Length: 421
Ligand code: PLP
Image (cartoon, rainbow, N blue to C red):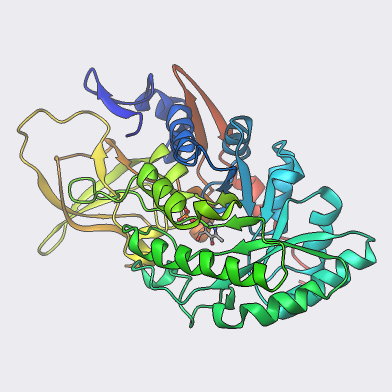
């Protein structure tokens, strides 16, 4: 459930009419709902009640500092995957002891930054990384808490580009080699092994792959404990999917996911962390765009919008589906029209939907893309010298621009022309 509903014939974000935001900030833009973000965080937090736990929001899904602060104020930890995300979390006021650092390619500099600024744990992913972290921590006279990310070789049954738990993916160490790698890490200075980490992919719409992975982690916990390691924390990753196509998708609920966690690892007495991103921010945001032209092709109608693949790349990159609806509520029973819904970028890949039936719209009408709060703004670019689009946060009847649209001067003046030209 989210807080984007028609009221009095107009799409609202909580108590704010979307067209009022458009009139103030121009189009296209993203708008996020405080109530939805809050609700989604609490669903996870409640689902893990009874376990010592921390919900570490995966900032990669939407890293605007207003979103981070909102979630952090509710008690969320953060899962970061770069030095930049680490600094963003700190800038938004997240304490270091609630930040976990994931990712396969952490640099010396990122490790140093996180050790100096405070970190809950590094989720390390390879032997070379373990060695470098040991060196960096030792050189700083510090001890870095680590979990080791294991790759359980489980098929997440999701899009291949966001599956991470199979043996041919770049992530984690093969679970079959875990005992050796833990023994190696335990012997190095500057490291404290605190647990195990696993993350098998994103947009999972079934619980079974989680169950397979978590059972393997539970077994490994017992084995490593028998080897003398103190496994007190399990980071179980993120990945629970959301219904993008609401008419025919119903992924498992956070409560079912929480029950699964309790069933598979609850008996181990570990502190449990999870790293959900998409389920917290995805349906908490929409992207709003204006129709520039309706163009008739040889055999189809094109709806040409002022938003493009640079603003929301998921359809072009993953063939992803987003519900697209008019901001003015269509009259009941109005016949739908079939469009190819596209942006103005000079690539045929700049297509949001092909042959999609939606209520008829005309030039200057506004349309909203649902489920755009995750992996939307964060993956946008200025391709075709199109400014990054504003992000807006709504709270009841108030709204605030939380990232303004840059001016063309700001974009163009970032380039420098060498003196020899
Ligand atoms: N944790 C890690 C290590 C990830 O790589 C990701 C995303 O792929 C997530 C958490 C968040 O996944 P999701 O947004 O699907 O919950």
